[in-house]
Amino acid sequence: MTLDSSRYDLGQIAFSKNIGKEPWLYENFVLPLRTDNQGRLFLFKTMNGLYTIILLIMSNIFMTLAWYGHLKLSESGISNNWPLFGVIAFSWGIAFLEYCCQVPANRLGFIENGGPFNLIQLKVIQECISLAVFCIIANIMFQGTHLHWNHILAFLLIICAVYLVFMK
Image (cartoon, one colour):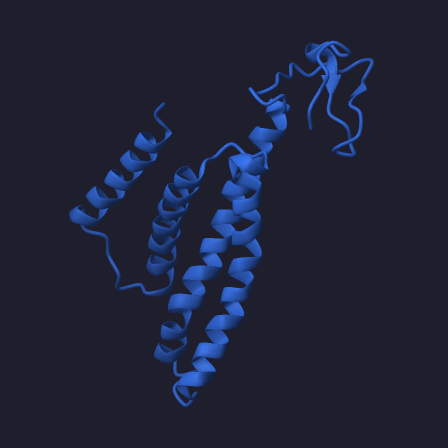
């Protein structure tokens, strides 16, 4: 959403309920909004970043369940008699849900679509979230899995990678 700054005082604009329509002024409520260097409202970019992170977390939960959930089913005896094709189809069904979250996350978060992240930042954030989600789900589903010092150090280095990617 771009604004003609000669027509509106950016400090007095509240965002429209219909994105793409003219912004409306709200009498008793003032949002301190500002635009980015392309004239888009900063609040929209911030919300797109938040929605991107939430969708990436959901996507990675589904991804981890698709990749490793069948191992738990096999461990509990549910899928022992399933043919390999059945296990693959089961995992693909879960992976479909992953893609239903992953694709919108990338579209919302990508800077060319109005999001706050470039392609490299999106990928590094996704990998960091992926490992965090995997560690949590692995510890819940597979109780015997334990993190050791080298796993924690590796995760901290990935967090350092996220920091480095966002440096200007």
